[in-house]
Image 1 (spheres, rainbow, N blue to C red):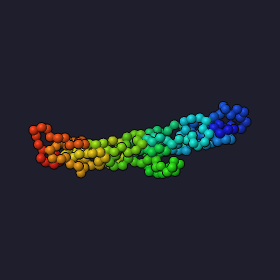
Image 2: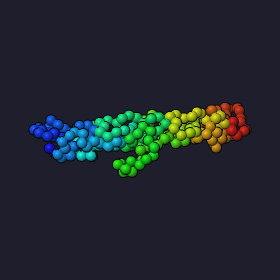
Image 3: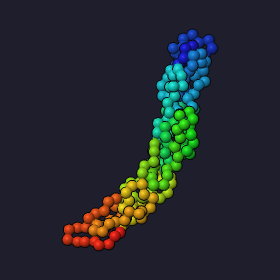
Image 4: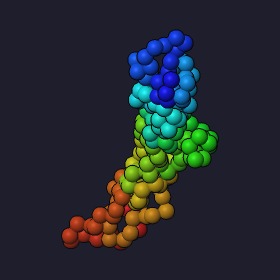
Amino acid sequence: CPAGYFCAEGAVDYSLSPCSEGHYCLSGTQTQSLYPCPAGTFNNRTGGDSSAFCLPCPGGMYCSEPGLGTPTGSCRAGWYCLAGSAAATPSNVTNSSWCGLGSGDVCPTGSFCPRGSAAPVPCTPGYYCNQTQLAQPTGPCQAGYICNGGDTRPDPPTICPTGSYCPNGSSTPRPCPQGTFQPLVQN
């Protein structure tokens, strides 16, 4: 029986038995499930003749068990999944099957991770992200401050300069209207 097919004992025509999705069949394979693609990978084609048919699960998704034809699903909100992840909530464990790439982790402070994230998203300018495992920013930057992006506090070190004002959620200072002046810092 050639690679890419399985031949049960007594089989006459191997062309009727291509290796199934999620698996590959080496030369002489007798059952279609003998060589499943490992967790963290999938194979959406039939007739796979080597482990090269097993593709790493795409970033933002996970492949939880051996023998999958499609990824299991999207990474959970508050987490990010690198290519080759086997869990919806990965912990930064090395997946040695894929060149030592980590499988992902909980979203760090200063960023957020919506469902299906392949990497942490730096906190949006004008907002802050003050804890781990956020699916969206915590809230808007406090009035009198400027959140440039990736901020972890509502009152970051960047304060509103003289001659401008910064309402809640400011990412840049706004100049005072013509005919007015604001002499104070952090207003």
